[in-house]
Image: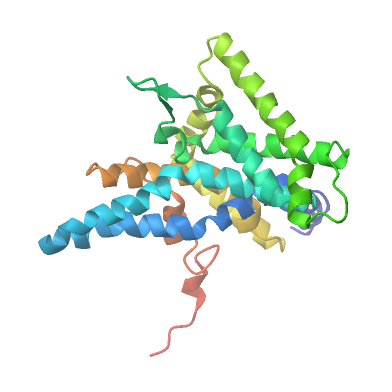
Length: 297
């Protein structure tokens, strides 16, 4: 046992510590944490719409309020995560986070398929903006921010005189990096369309997200992820923080799919979501530590 502990402390702990402090994973983790108030608001809206507002007939008219809140939270979850992830990653590089977040959102919209109505107006279906687009959104946010940051660091910017207000100076500094970043994703979307691959969303969803989400609904995968979190804690590392980017990427889409189904009066399709872990695994903390509190009469 002592040899095993020495082996783990020598080889496993340093690698885990590097993963926990990896800049991109930290940005994803902080990006999800930043939108937590919106996720909770959307969850309460779905809950009220399917409990109190249904049980009390006189309150049925309030379901429209819950629907509006859902539309402003779950329906655009990916858009929110794209901005917050780009923002936090840029801040990790000590670069203008607001500009990076906005450019990340613009880049994501650039590669998102458009639909056209009878009048010829283009629009984006909300199905690309909810949690099903998370993997695409995260990849775009990370790449767009990396391009933006590298150009800023190389001073490919419009530098204004010191007399110009800081906000104006930052805006002009972001012009050239922002244009290059957006045109890069515009070119990518154009190439994908020309080779008849539909969109970047379709490529990533079919190749990465769909298989991983199918894997995540297995009992074995849930057990492995829960064990990994506690294994990190065993060696003094914050297991929940280290695994949070992976957990959110896999299980928030499942939670949103359940919320969307319930909103439409259908049965929830996914058994394992972030709420599942919070209820049955993290009750009182990682490892269901609430049970360790002594019971006093």
